Image 1 (spheres, rainbow, N blue to C red):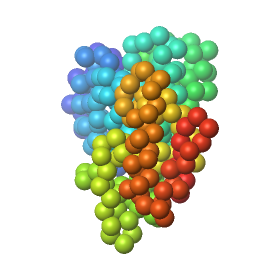
Image 2 (image 1 turned 180 degrees about the vertical axis):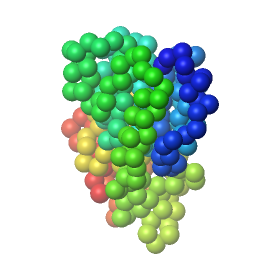
Image 3 (image 1 turned 45 degrees about the vertical axis):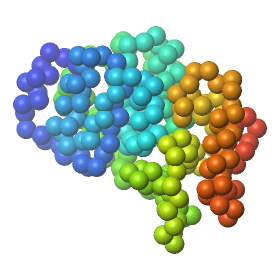
Image 4 (image 1 turned 90 degrees about the horizontal axis):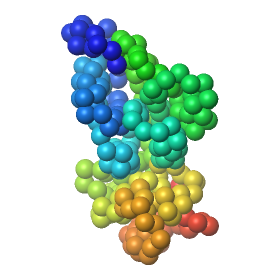
Length: 240
């Protein structure tokens, strides 16, 4: 961002995006993160700011953001790995801040799944115009991964509700696992990736807890729906 940020924030909002748009901002810079959040909220966006990468991954599962912005001080390889992680969780637009205009890094970012690279420095006016434009494209989604014909997830009550009104209460781990799998129906999430995302563990050697949660989740879904949690070579998937 540039030095005229404060002046720009005092200007009248000229663009009004969909107020329901949830923007997840991953920014590990203590001075920049609050400013990004303030600017986005001034535009009527629902800005969720996370300074911890691991917490941000968990939030991406919990809230299903409409737009993801990544601005982290890290080696380029780590930024790319983060993009790949988020792309595995969501089909929503991902915008990545880059510290310099290196063509090879920009191309690598696009190949990893980024929808737009934002090279620093960028004026607040241009930055907000980009975000507003992307927010218009990203919502409303045609289908929600939380709503399936068989049931829909209720994040507030942490349950799955069937069309006939039955409420299936889930533990935190069961809910997080089901929501992760439902984010990409048919996609096989590797067990190691599930453990890192749902449990937040870096050591993925013990997969027994995952197997136990899958077992309990299938039992709660019932015999007519247990097929939805499919075991695949190396991981699990959701079949609607």
